[in-house]
Length: 308
Image (tube, rainbow, N blue to C red; front, side, top):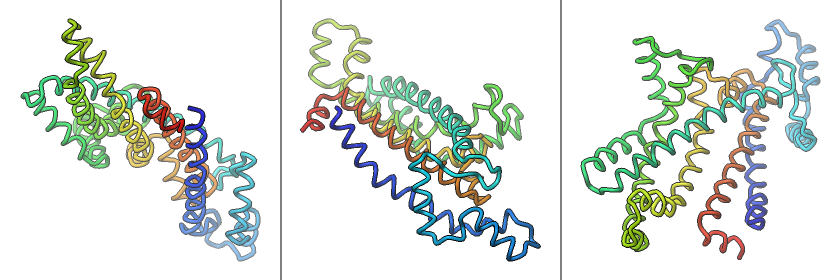
C-alpha cells in the first residue's frame, strides 16, 4: 500500500507543475491589471510604480521563478483587490465547495445504489426499463441548462426557492439538485450493470443455496463485489463535481472556489487565481489517491499489482 501511495504521489508532481505553469502564464493573457486598479487618468509613472510594487516589471520567467519560490515557502502572494493573503481567500471559499460537492456525491451515490440495485434485481422488467431510461436521460443533461431551468421555474415563476445564498436548507436545494442529476444518472447505470453481473455470479447461487435471505444476497454479497467499479466511477465523478462547480457556483452565487476563480479572472487577481487552482489541483490529486486506496482495500488483485 505504501509503495502504491509513493508511486501515485511521485507521478502527480509533473501534472501539478504543468497546471501551475499553465495557470501562471494563461492568467497573464487576460490583460494588464493596471487597467483595472488604476484610474483612467493614471500617468506612465503611476503605471510603472504599480508594476514595480507587484513584480510585473520583471520578465515572465523571473516572475514565475519568484512565484515557485514563494509557493515553496507556502506564501501564495497577496490579492490585488483586497491586499489580503491569497491563501486566506482560498481557505474561506474551499469549504463551501467541499460541502456542496460532498452532499451532492453522497446523495447521488446512495440514490444510485438503491435504484440501480432494484433495477438489476429483475433485469428487463418494467422497473429496470424505466430506471434505465431516466438514468440515461439524467446523465446527458448539461448542468448549466438545469441550473437555468431551476432558477426560471422554482425561483422566478413559482417563488419557492432562493436564487442565491447559503442560509437555510432551501438555498441548498437548487445548487445540489443541479449538480446531482448527472452523477446520479451515470452511477445508476454503473450500479445496475455491476449488480446484474454480480447477481448472476456462482457465489450468489451458492449463497442462495445455503439459505441466505435475499437482502443478504443483494447487499451482503453482490453489492460488495460490485463496489469496485462503482467506486472508480464515483471517484471520477467527484473530480468532475469539483471542476463543474465553477458553473453552478457562478449561476447561484455560491461562495465557493469556482466562483472565486471566475471573480479572480474577471478582476485579474493573479495571486488568488493561482492559489485557487493550485489548491483545487491538490484536492483532486488527493481524491484520486483516496479512490486508489479504497479500490485496493476492496480488491486484493489491486494490492498485488501495486506491490509488484
